[in-house]
Length: 194
Image 1 (cartoon, rainbow, N blue to C red):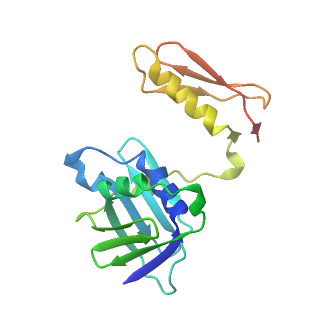
Image 2 (image 1 turned 45 degrees about the vertical axis):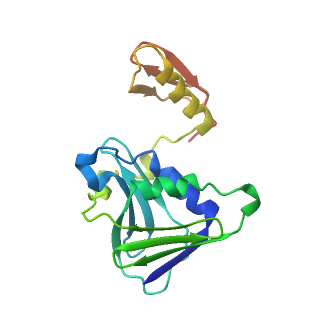
Image 3 (image 1 turned 60 degrees about the vertical axis):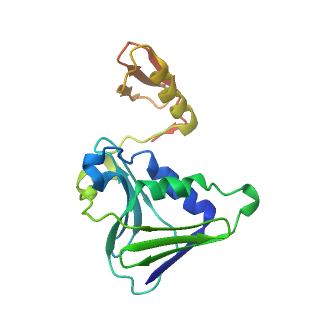
């Protein structure tokens, strides 16, 4: 049996962050959930639907001498955890995540859930994450709230575009242009560019 400790707030944020990329396609059952993965160094939570991938490093306290593992947490369990959004007054209530064989339990003051892991192998998602030479990268810092609003605006347009073109400026004072398939243009001012 392995135990991890965190807070309810952190647990909520972690599962919410990857839930957007979980697949709903039942024929690919191994993608209908989130992968809890420990590679010997980092504890990660990852979800993908084949078109997008969200992977985050978890800051949960972990036991010494932890052996590498990979488990698929069912989508229903992830959604149930997200429904238990902690209240602001419960800032530091602890949450304990327990793994015992093919089972996982999450306990806090607010809730207690248990599930059985999905029987299957999660794809090797690390192969699609590009390795980047940081010195050759053109970094743009954006306000994520504004970027999310642009995504919502694109989705509302006639025709319902699913793809946009992101045009990065050559000069750090120029705006970033986002074009959708209907010719609509959205402008995002950079916070800073390096």
